Length: 498
Image (cartoon, rainbow, N blue to C red):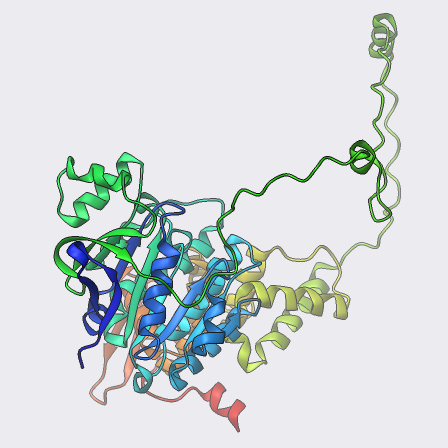
């Protein structure tokens, strides 16, 4: 079904039309400096297409929540756990509800993690729920930055991976990405390159004008026009818009953002007691800051006398204030806490940060002595515990497996140790569902990709016997798993369901 969206006015007074069905297949990139009208353009697109297609808006500033009153969008507050956001996203696709993910009030890293969890839930939806969805991401340079910033590498990796999946692989799953950015230079190239439709607004920096002109097929001289574009004026190009660069003016909208551009307001008349109003503390003000006077300088003779004094004899070591910690008892307590955490069937699908907070609370409840494990040490102990073998058990073969696992990223060590333990104990090869749970995913395909990654690294060799059962051989360990069916159900999940 062909649906044309009225975006405004094109050259010579013609209607600027956008082919919605073509947009769903080819994606859209919007670029323009702050104040160029990007949010107004996105709002016009969302209002005009709301009756025709399901929508999901990633809203970092909370500007698009006003769509809920007029068009029935559901506002999802992002102040939730990542696991909860992923599940909500799956239900959004299942029931075909238009939503606004409100990220207002979160810091940048929290916004990146929340957006990644929500987009990941939409991307991993069941095949039966792959209905068309228009996914609009405002300020896309926050979620797909071209270079590392002040956020952690883990948050950047999660967010960039989710945006890459949206723009590169989302089309076959019904996800049509519409991304808006202030600067093309700040946006990851592999994300921007997947868009086939462009709406370029006002920009002033040479590097951004050059990239915009290159995307629109213009020469450098023509790129100067981007400096002269007024607010709400864009140059359109793409199969859903126009086969040639076409200047358009975005039409009016029915809703408005909660935040507006600052406008000049006359100053009030200066009150007579302005000084008292400023410098007199109110009843709710904090205690006044006491400025300390700098210490008086010490005479040089006194300094030399202090330096020439002999050092006092060291005092005999005092008895320890706290009792000496029994390391064996402490390790046993930590192992017991880790077993309690892993007994929860949902623990596999929670992030390491959430599990770490639960671990610290349980250690306090059990009175585990000593300093708490750092996050890196917790991840390592958790990976070993998930494999089902204590760190000191298993002999030389298991020690070699532990050494090999240290060459892998933190999130893959638990899966590797699980299959290595199965090999050392001559157990059947774990199924794809079991490996997916160990990785924290519901997708068996991810488990198969992990095994392929281990095989590329030369850590194992996968083969299939005559009964279509999988066997994993470990050359460095000198052992292999017993044959196991890769499509077998996950026993832990089945036991939890029963």
